[in-house]
Image 1: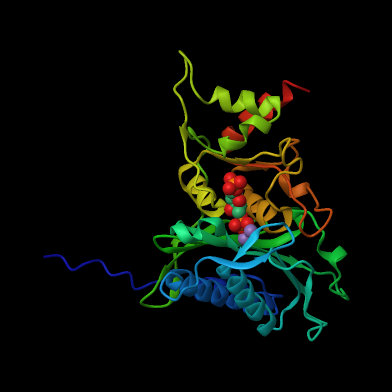
Image 2 (image 1 turned 180 degrees about the vertical axis):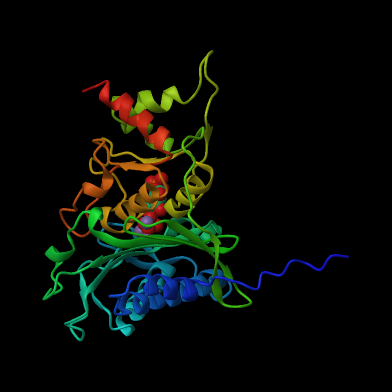
Length: 337
Ligand code: AHG
Ligand code: MN
Ligand code: MN
Ligand code: MN
């Protein structure tokens, strides 16, 4: 019988980072060290997520965060794990987290040149039900002499140097992209304890009849959004779309990246600025989808990456996914202008 084709040329995340650094002659290695710290943050969060039910880590922490979310125990633990990973690599000047009201400044590293934004556990309302959750992150490069003030991080997503997310699902997936770079997907091999490259150069299909939105909010939607969603429900001449909504942005985004379709969290009369946060949810995801050939816009159909946050927890409506599917929203919206 033929011997199983063994892949002896495995590309781990560690090797990927080394190869990326080698491509940039001027690289100091700081970005690489920062990414190694991120890698450990993902591994440790995944570890606790998967054991939560066994060690009584599900349920509420009894506190809430600045954006009004009730914090789950794992929100707090994920946040603490992330903060210590970012502090310990000595390459991060400041950190914005969904779970921290203010910017965390690492004044012990005044010369560190990176700022990190993160949503330590995205989809945490789903945690106790065992539904996939994840971590969303973005990396900005600070100007020389930065003081770590919040004004220095209120930047549009066009200034991100890297972004991505993990999804702690049936397996632990990592999707990462750099400015103008490809989108690369990795899968955790628990035996090796390594992220293995499984999805080089990810591209979101140009169109796909799947839409992902919480229709429980449709009472509050603006007219163009109502018309757009109704247009997806088919007619004599067009087949209806499939509805898929998990309620964890990372899970809805990962499916959309792989299968195509559109994910939307519109701003509406109930949430005039939308629900999702620009710095650590909308912008990082927008860069992933643009680099994968898709589109990402806000509720005014402005390019999501060009929308600067007014404060570190500022929110925005968002539509992201297949190029043609987002274009349908834009075209419907423009009929009302
Ligand atoms: P987080 O758990 O980080 O607060 O994010 C939750 C977000 C996002 O994951 C998801 O797309 C959205 O909330 C779902 O909101 P609804 O339950 O209102 O649909
Ligand atoms: Mn939350
Ligand atoms: Mn989130
Ligand atoms: Mn969160």
